[in-house]
Image (tube, rainbow, N blue to C red; front, side, top):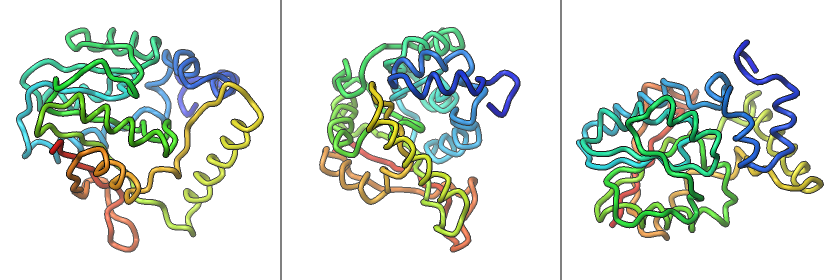
Length: 236
């Protein structure tokens, strides 16, 4: 997909008809050559925004995939870095690329940590959780953090209704809803279920104080607002 080293259309179709875990196991060997891997420009903008708030001690990447967020955590954290994901295939790629980090296979809705980390980050994962699951997820991340620990992740502004991107994302979500209504196991991946206001409410309900900062390096919308903000959720 968009690269000679990316997955074929057939491979993507097989993935889309699998469970989320199995789908990522299948996609793992080619994942870093797809548009689904968080671009370095977003990782670097996140690291730049977090730098004045550090340094941090131990770092955690929630839903780490192939370990791209090591690029963010390494210069910010003075102690160990850990990634957690439930896909064995993705973790194998992360372990091979970054052997000095710790990699843990677990469902992030039941994290095997308590009061262990100073900084947690996550990239591109919220769409894999239904809105009703977010409060539980955020509570688990809060439990994994030390008092005063920070949970940070970028969240994009919604595209204008008049843009092709808006209708493409809306169409993708509609197709996924139909797929999940008629096919099992479900593959949960929606782009329109994580508005900033709802995410903020769920974080605050889980026990975080929440602020945001614009990631200006990623550009601005036509109305002057930032295309992307970094959510900073502090364990109170």
